[in-house]
Amino acid sequence: MTRKQKRLSIIAAGAGFLIAATGLTFYALGQKASYFYMPADLQTATLEPGQRIRLGGLVEKGTIIRGQGTQVSFGVTDKENSVKVTYTGILPDLFREDQGVITEGTFGADGVFVADSVLAKHDENYMPKEVADSLKAKGVWQDEQAGGGS
Image (cartoon, rainbow, N blue to C red):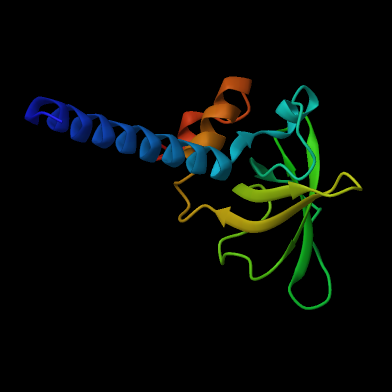
């Protein structure tokens, strides 16, 4: 093998390694992606069984039901549709009715969203950006309510 052939084989091997590493990285990131939906979006969405998603909206008034221990169920609404959510764990301190929330999890066999994490607003002027943008597009949430939402 000449010096030129050795150099080209090293460059080719390095390029192959970089391509393989990049491909594996994108594959791994694609497996962890959670898509964001509002309750109205779920009517037209085709979700695979067990697919992880983020469900966002407002905590529906009168739907918070505390069960045994840390189990709680509540509704998430975008003022058009509502989705029942169950969650086992400690809720954020600022979790309450008519406030912005994003839950992450999967749908159970009974059609109830089983959340494994719940994110609530962090002060009275904040609405999660994804939720605020979706609610604004539907004409449900006004800028003066969202305050520093962006």
